[in-house]
Image (cartoon, rainbow, N blue to C red; front, top):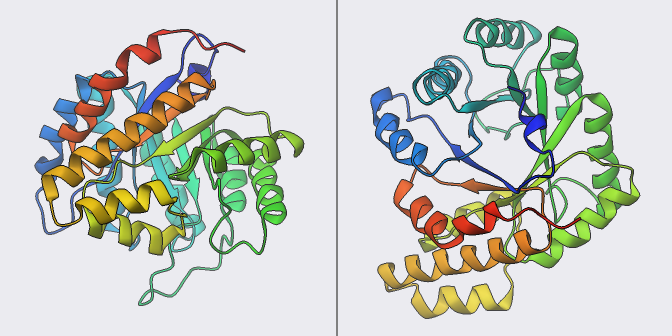
Length: 292
């Protein structure tokens, strides 16, 4: 099933993201996580792509295939272009087809200091166009409510996003954010730019201080005063911080769903307990048809 067809306006789509275990860990470590996430009834689960290529990316395929065959949930398999040649992508697409995986998320990928980038693809839009030409794939792209960290300004950022859509992306998932007003402003820019594909809001529940420090460094997300005060108040109390972080995510989701967002993409960090607590708090919101 193509993921883009899930956004039919009858309900708000709920999806999750997981990542394969490190190469030093057995692949089975992700299976218990997936078993617990299955009970939360996501519409689809995305699986991230290793920055180093090779064996790490085979794990992406293995986890995606397991989700499909074991739980009959559509997987969204990430592919990055910065460390991939056309031959690498051809091989992964061939394997995806053999495993009946038709949903691909095309990303530039993070620059890894010790790995020389490949030259076959420079941007995610280039990879989206290439994947579209290779078969009947449903292509997802990433979007950035506060602008991509490497983009000079918000106008350039939304124009680059339009190129992704023109290249073949049929739906989008946003980078994490902690202030919903940034997402609503982004949606206005996207509409003005003629971007009319479904857009999911990416939500990451923060349960420890190191987690948020790392993510902010990577993506440059702004921390609103309310969030910062929460971190300062509970940073030395792990259980209290986890409760506060979950409550903050629940508040974000409730507001987004009430405003008619197309979907919520929960960055689970492979923590089914946190995902369950959030879903138990907001699950009934997804059963109410959105107002258009």
